[in-house]
Length: 158
Image (tube, rainbow, N blue to C red; front, side, top):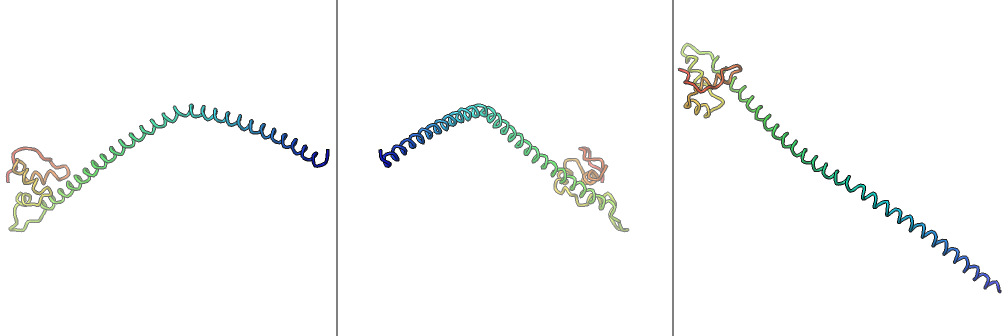
């Protein structure tokens, strides 16, 4: 055997050993991938119920938040209405006090006429109420703090 033939045989043997080592490594990788696949499947099976519960909880939280926003908007509207009513009552009280305590000159109108002619914050609604049995005097007095309030009764005489 010549040196060239010996080199070819030696190269062939080394290639076979390398190929066998490569086959062994690839088999180990294949086993590892199978094991990994089974772990991923078991992880999916374990997380499906948790994800379903998480979705339902998220939907419940979304619904609760929508209800809370609706309630907050409603509360905001009620609060705004209360502030508007409070401002109207305070303004009506100032108008009534200004009309009642306006100094009358020697030829000025009596106090009952001053109140009757005072501008009313309710405007036309007060005039409508006057025709329904409530006078402007009662409207003006009802807006004062601690006033008698509006009642359906006979009109106050002038």
